Image (cartoon, rainbow, N blue to C red):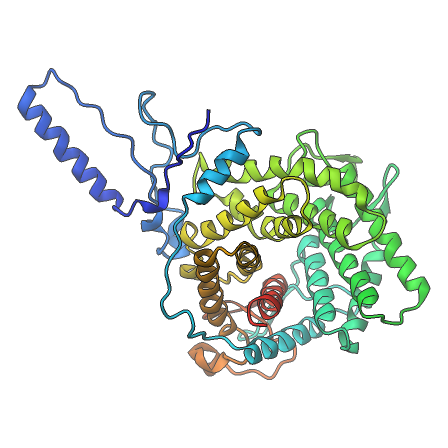
Length: 480
């Protein structure tokens, strides 16, 4: 049975060392009073991970939070119980109701403005076009201080970059240069499709697997392309539209084939052996489900995906929250699924599919998790990806009238994105970053790119893409 009153781990503020000292002194006192024959049992250590979240990223792998410590069978019920799929909605709702959000008295004093967001967006989208190769894919990573172009490659990040560029065009459909670049990218992927057993899939050069994530991100790019054309009455040659529609159909059929018996999606398809792998990935689960729900909502002919989405959604939500948190609350699996699921379940909530309120709970719980458990504002590397999820949580909180959650998310968005825009080469806040001031550049492939850290001169195409998408969402939904 699930408890009706779930213990809220965020209420506990004592540091771990203080808990140990208190426990030790208590045990010594009991031993001294009643004799060595009376052996006291140690209380179960309550979860408190916040002490380690302010440490530099380089040290975190060496930090032990004792989460693997054996729990006595007679101790109190764990904070994160082993709930069944039927019990999960009740557990999640109770946990949601127990959340506490930070109060921000100075919330009305925003650091970001619409002008800053728009300028950063324009420069970033231009940077993506400048980094498109003649073939139609992208430069992967560039160190603009050492002037070293990394020729490393990865299909999933390349396809994600095309998705990002397609959203640039969707955001500014009158930008002809971005439109031409998206067409070029689609043509590149159309030339790298292979035939399977009744389906076609992406066969990216140099890779042995066709990963579900890469296919899903390509599908998302195609969906946004078709939406942009339709919603803005853009005149595009009919053969081009049929080409895009046919490519999307191939991708969706392949992703349906990739679903496993446990309702997750295979990480990759072994092209040489013509078989799918029997394990999944939190990243690719999220990317695939986001592709499915956007196809079902925005493109004619894909409503048959809705039952698949409704069936798999609670399975994945449970897997990457309470099930993952029994091992570690600041879970890497949760992080992998985080922003994809937040965008996915916001779409789900707004579409009012089956049990949509459950997924509204989920989006807000995960928004709280990324801020107060994962400590997103204290991270030293680029976290632009996270704001895709936090803006999604802001949207759901606003729709529900949950003012405390909405304000906490708004505060994080404003401060987090303000910091990250300072990492944009030549960007509207670059003058506030001493490293960029001391390392000026005029290179087109650098200007507008997003650094991986405040003083890290590497510009990665997927880092830029995620941050730009977050800026688009923030500009449209928070700063409108």
